[in-house]
Amino acid sequence: MYSIADVTKTDGGLYKCTYFFVVGGPIEAEVTVGVHLLTVLEDISINPGTLSCVFAGSNAPTLTWYSGGVPIQVTDDAFTEDPGEWEDNGVTSVLTINPELIADVTLVACKVTFSDDAVTDPIETSTNVHIREISAVTPTTYSNGGKVTLSCVFAYGASGTGPTTVTWDTTALDSFTANTDYIVTDGILGDGERYASLVLEDVDSVDYAAYYKCSFTYSDEEAAQPT
Picture 1 (spheres, helix red, strand yellow):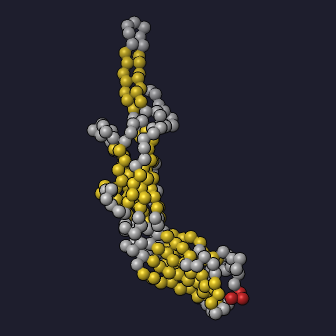
Picture 2 (cartoon, rainbow, N blue to C red; picture 1 turned 90 degrees about the vertical axis):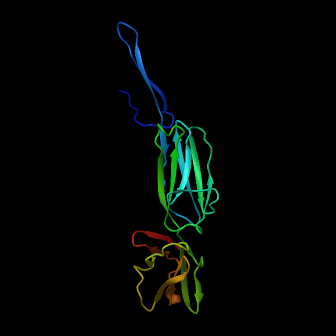
């Protein structure tokens, strides 16, 4: 028995097994082995964003992108595909996604098929695309009537699902709770956006060297970045 411990894209090809006898000529058998390696797609949050379908193997395939189980057409404005070229036993197809034209969450898949599909089974990888982005309304703090206000907006797409809760954290305090020193507000700005602000009432007590973070949380996951 012959085995390959770590298969690479160059290990495909014709393999032959030969038996030799003391009397008489040898007998042999051969088999063609195809190597197909497909990189797994990972969940992404985009605004906009790209997905890369990376294939390596012993024979050139056809890569087809799917959205919601349906092949993506060149006339679909929500997606732009760069199919790439087959070279050095590999090909990478890049899909650019327009977040304004797809729903949150959208299942996107890359399917790999071969010309001898009657013999070689297709392979595929898929992922969920989340239309989510967090940003600061103002990149710096500002004073308004002796108050300091920090603001951020979470965008999740016009057809998306809004986050469950909003929280603020900082290195200046253990946690933010409602009192006279600071006020936490959050709400819906409009289609696909949620706004949150942190108002520090006492400008003299503000730690300007502190690190502040706004987090928008879903019931099953967190999408958080510092403001």
